[in-house]
Image (cartoon, rainbow, N blue to C red; front, side):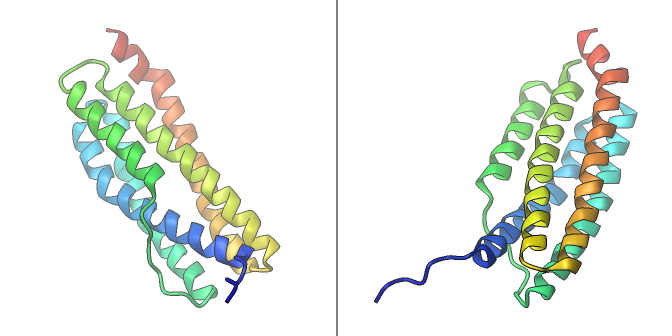
Length: 165
């Protein structure tokens, strides 16, 4: 018996599970990054983003409800790799003036991954006629872009100079 070909609906659902796992992993990682950060603005940015991440998880759960699927994650190798790199930076650069620059770079790698995923999911939701899901995904995409810009400002205004000291 031939397998039914997978559709954009299937891909949307699989990618939704991927980013759901990623957001939960990020939510559990941010407190460690905040604790390790020395720069007050960077520490505050990590703490703020943890709160935003809670809202993003709730939005994803609403998207699951829209497509009538149970909210569940599937292991996202990309986010596991990015967060493992962040942990390695925390170990390798502990007590180093470059620690915050490394933490910030790891955080931006996460943001760039999320921006890519949310942009894709929003576009697919539009294609699938899931207007409410597209709005929810766009709201999160907007937050991720703002976080990325805030991290860039912290890097340029303080952290990179502190790393050189």
